[in-house]
Amino acid sequence: MKNNNPIRCFEGTAQPHEPFWSFRDGAQTESGETEIEFYGPISEFSWWGDEVTPKMFKDQLYANGKNGPVTIRLNSPGGDLIAASVIRATMLDYPGFVTVKVDGLAASAAVMVALGGDRILMQVSAYMMIHEAAVGIMGYFNIDDMKEMIDELKVINAGIVDAYAAKTHVDAEKLQKMMNEETWMTASEAVAYGFVDEIITAGDKGKGDKGGPEDKKHKHEVGNFANALKHYVNVPKALLESPEEEDAVSVENERQVQRLRDEVKILI
View (spheres, rainbow, N blue to C red):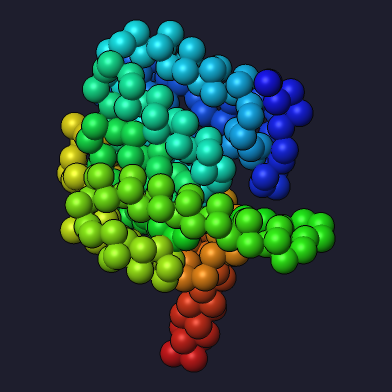
């Protein structure tokens, strides 16, 4: 049955069945391939029982990709695991070669989207995070209800571990421990564990990196997720600092330095 009134899972301004992705055709991209951008939450609404939005994504993928190569540009704090799992399955079924580029952040459910790629690349300045499945609880529940939720979360966690193991070949026990501890990975760590195949550096222009300005752009985009990241435990400090605040501090510091220079000139 179609879910015409999907449940909102994450705070935001999106409307039900509204795409949270955008397509760009090859004429608009540096690589010449069709690109899909996931810049933000992986669906603010649950895909559980939703037959509308997943079909919309699949139809647009095949219409825009034309069964040829596509590139996913990913910068997301996570979101609905069901949506991420369906997107991954859709990408795995897609006949064309899929390249994933983690531009700034792939956290939580966004990692599942990344695993839909045939090859996964990651900006040298980007981060990836895995953790245990969680559920937001609203209302009142008895012991039986809570036990049922726990059992469901265990099943979900097992599925996540299986998906990670299929890509990384890290053993299940190690992956479960990493999820328990909410593990944040730099690009080099993500490659070492096998989540990512290759790091994109400033010199790799052929892989879509534009160097300094592009890095700054991604840094600002990650900064926009600060509120979404605050419910995580081990977030790197750099991701919680607002780029706008950093810029303001830099301006103030420069002003103070100039004031001291002026005072020194007066004293001399």
